[in-house]
Image (cartoon, rainbow, N blue to C red; front, top):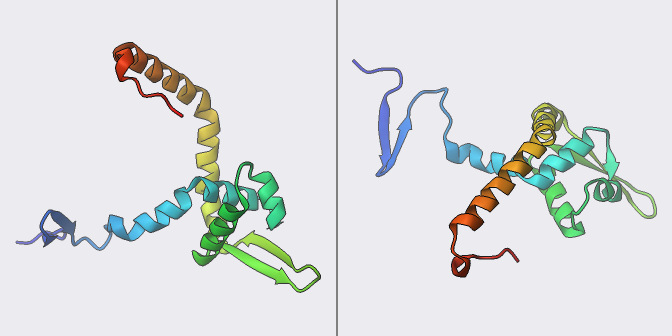
Length: 147
């Protein structure tokens, strides 16, 4: 008798579960890459405060280059997370806002941001402890310095 989660080998080294509720990691990895990207998370969080123009986003998302902001906005628009509205003025006005899908993502993004803020001191301390251990355990001639 077969179970509802019958396993099948799709190719050598890959086993997939034929459960209709399971998700193929490859199918969602592109989505997770987009929404897990640091710039995307920051932009989504800022647009959660309300629609913004390009330069407003650049100003509130510190450290992002114009090129990276352009690419990230384009990708977020492509994925249906933000909308881009051009108003035909001189110069043209371009506004960005979260779509319904983007607003739905705002909850998890805000939760992740709050977690990072709340745990930042613990992570800084853990990094310092790890780095101190590495220095103590690695002979001087084998150390690699960050540039």
